Length: 273
Length: 351
Image (cartoon, rainbow over all chains, first blue to last red; front, side, top):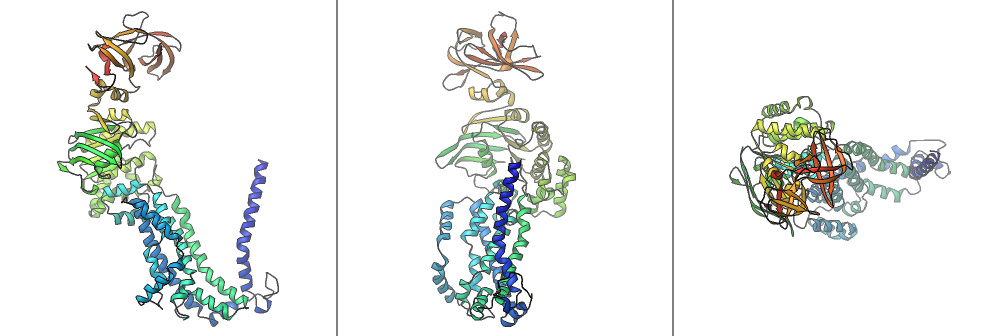
């Protein structure tokens, strides 16, 4: 019994250490964002004269609200597109039997190994040809064409749903689309929630494509581009930059907390045995 | 309601043959059980009737209409799955009404049919529950209810009782059969449990390795098994089957043990006798076998005795608990009229 407690203590200490490593920089960021510029190099964690003036200043210097809205709009549309198309593809790979299903699935997985930079130029040419250069569309349209990661994730989840549910529904008279929308999709909430976080974060943090497709027009561009510009113009003003960083990660944290509930609730849903 | 006609049915997965030319008919309103050991193809056969598996060769007709290329939903069948396959995110009522909803039935009609089925199955108080909140037996009933609500021509059951505990299984056995009689429907019931098949079915189809071994009424199969496999599979405890030599209404086996049989066949045979067809007789009774009781199990009503005659093992089931003890020397007389002879090579019944 005692030995167990000692082992528990060790595990607990390790976890605590890991947690501190994770949250340390985050706390530092919050603390720095609350300092006046004069105190930024004083080596203390807690500001001597805490101030929230960095935040309103930020909104004066750059159009933060526009950048936030642009990023949010693009990420929300892209997330919706990914959830819809990847869950459809995952469903087909998990439930429908068709020739060369596994071969096609492997080919899809192989595309995970192709770096985004490789396809960036052809993709640029296509969007230029379509006349979408300079609009936000190239940042969310590709999300509606599915993706290997999301398809894989959703397929794996759909495989855990007993195939008999689909068979029972077929006998009950449901079409494939019906089975997907009324049986499989509602049951996949936990996986959708997890994938939504990934998709949202991916789009939210995307600097590369935003730099390519959107000119440095602060009315249209995303938060990542705005922050990058800001970084070059106001380098050395750490409290201001930390305030900007905090605002940029806040939505991700909010999305995570919103989706977290579904991770747990969905797992206990199983009408079998 | 409708009859089901299965003709020369083949099923192949790649190079692996699952069914070889299976043919039988199910009459309108009949309850037929498909039995066989694991992997004999009985579930595949049922799934082919349901339309969940493609047909490699042969044909399936329901109500006179060939169904080979007809989608499951147009076959007018309902299926109860082994794991019930209830939709976990729908209430009991929604589960039961799902097919009617898909067919665009008006809400009032759905509610009426669901209520009627729930009444028959004793589910009225559970209509608003989720499947996760029900016991195994209740889920089983919901699965049945989902099938009943559709009023299909044919009910298909894929081992529906195997996830229930023993007492509930016996109860549900009777309930399913009662329901069948009440609805007058045609039912095809897959099971690996020959007791279920014996007690529920009008007729039994025994499958082995994708071949149909015998089709017949339960007692006909029990009394006149077509071959040694069916003889060993149907009946519990299983029939004793012993290599022997037959001549002049006798069989001889082991170290010259002779017992009478009602059969004039001459030559090497497999002699079959069911455990319950032994009679415990006094020592040195003519035509009795002297055996040593190696193990005795009492079921309360009967005594089940495992014996050996030389190297040959026999199981005997003795009524009225005669009080045999382990190690006792006993005399068992087989009933000559209940003896079976099977061909040594093919296992086919010899008459």
